[in-house]
Image (cartoon, rainbow, N blue to C red; front, side):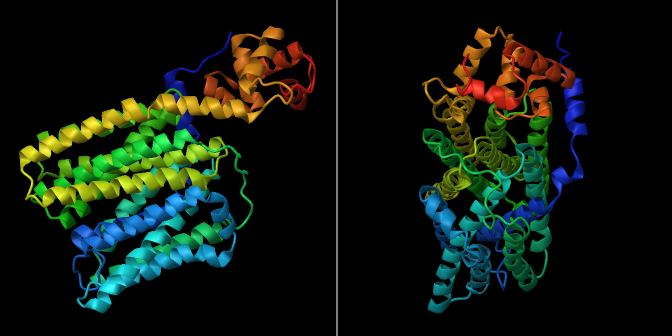
Length: 488
């Protein structure tokens, strides 16, 4: 009889398996620095944190930079082969963080009046958009190369570090904070391309030639809609709240990031199967509930600000985790996955700010208007989940890629179906069949143990029985049998 894990044992095993390196390492720190740069630069369109004289950054800077960022990400996805070849050149790789630093410095001094400074702002917006697009794709590849469970714990911690750096750097004198902000991309790029050697060496995992097709388009459409809803709500909240943007972000961002980290970690530890397909529903539900809570909470309170920012953080985090795990588990090009997925979420957030700005043109928002907008945002979230992209799409995509993983050369049967034929022919039990499929796909004993909730000894026993029933002696013979190289 199989010895199954109780929920308590499962949770204890997952917590015990964690180490400090899962949270804080070079990858986490480098990613945190570029996230902090994003917060400092783009939130300065609201509160003017990073400018030489403390003036507010013009809104068109955010618009143009966001457009350039989105175009860079989508162009990378559509021309991923060409993009990958170009990024093999050290000089070209260095242009990403270099553009971000130069662009930041141009925006820092571009707040002064005059046609010259207007041109400087335009150039700064273009450079920051293109540079951040390149470095985002670089970090996507960096996370593709590691175990998804490390992403599940490392990425939220990186977002938290960025949330801490945001008010710390923002509290520095304007000139000092501006220079520190400009240096963040260079340090992040040095970690990315120098220590982690992304795009320098051949990838640890060669990308699967399969393209994600409709899956990534559906995920992109859902990301765009959810980003739009979130962007509108946050911009409207800034308008109706009596707290200025500077106080709102500095006082609430760390708490919001802690809440977001708690949500992700809770899903990772307590959900029975550690899979993003099962995390998707509760996180979407949490995001919708956050939107619906905002109208009934005092908008001048810290709680309202924390909830609004936590929805934004959690959604961004979860999309990053989905993209990283999808690219890693199915050996897909990170440039396609992150270029399309992250490009669409960026475009959605940009659209949200544009829509909010359009609505603001008709006057300031009342509490009743804010309530209606928050309700519409919650409806958009549910609509996206029900009709565009749900966990069913994640599961179907997983099965489709698994079926393409190993194919019998002379027959049209996909991998999973071929395994079932073998299982029926040799009278394997249902559990033995599951173990055989996972083992043939290259899963390790601990992975099978956690995936099927059975002990290590039970996995070993099932494998021994499979070998005996199939009359084989090693894994290669099993793969030959599945691929049709050995007769049934």
